[in-house]
Image 1 (tube, rainbow, N blue to C red):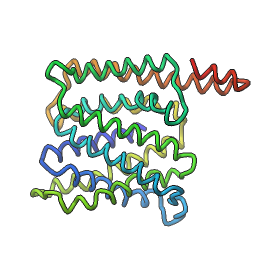
Image 2 (tube, rainbow, N blue to C red):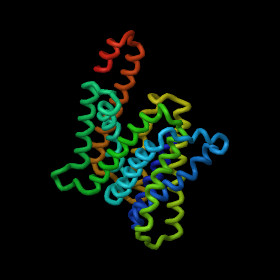
Image 3 (cartoon, rainbow, N blue to C red):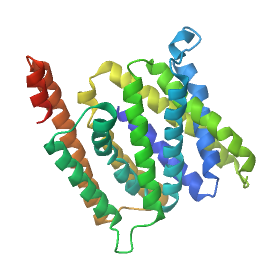
Image 4 (tube, one colour):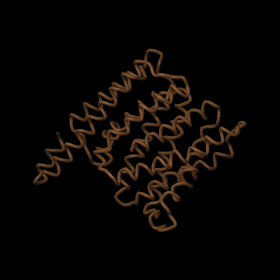
Length: 294
């Protein structure tokens, strides 16, 4: 899990480097997904058992891939304007949005304590963006759109995981966006790209594909509850890479907002763990319904 989010931090740092260099966001996104789509079958040795990549619901894969595509493009646009730590902090509000949306979309309704944590996390977003004081800008809009798109992508993943294999979920999450973005290449401006930029572009697929492979391996070795806090380690890497590569260090407002969001997210993870324990111990449906309101 540590390796996965270290690679994801490399991915975002590379994307920001390319975006600042003026390379078209659509081309960056297409290259990232194309490399991912090529790498995944190799990592999973798809030729040994092609049935693992069979799609039960192709249309659902396309819609899910479209949301991931939108999240990636909005993230690239956000990274043009914001520091790495800012985009990551807003991205970490995603688990709270997922908890809120899981009620109407999945029937997993949150209790009042988790709603209070969601509202607290939103306060953290307001601390970072500070609307009304001249700080909130187009970069924050792009970051929020990226987070919302990714939240719906995660919810679809949870719903589809009961019928689709992990290999198909990780493969088509790259193949679908690549196909959707291919027609846009004809309308993309092609600036002069140097050899080093080409190297970074080719590495995007490696960082993304290998990072997702590490996630799969992590969930095979440990429970989701045990691994849940580790994504927040990405904040450390993003602050470090922002300082080393772009000479940017988040201000106190961003650090304070990030701390509020991380604390709220960890509390939600704690409550969901307590809920699962209570549900397993519930002797009947009535007791289980009471437990879900806690």
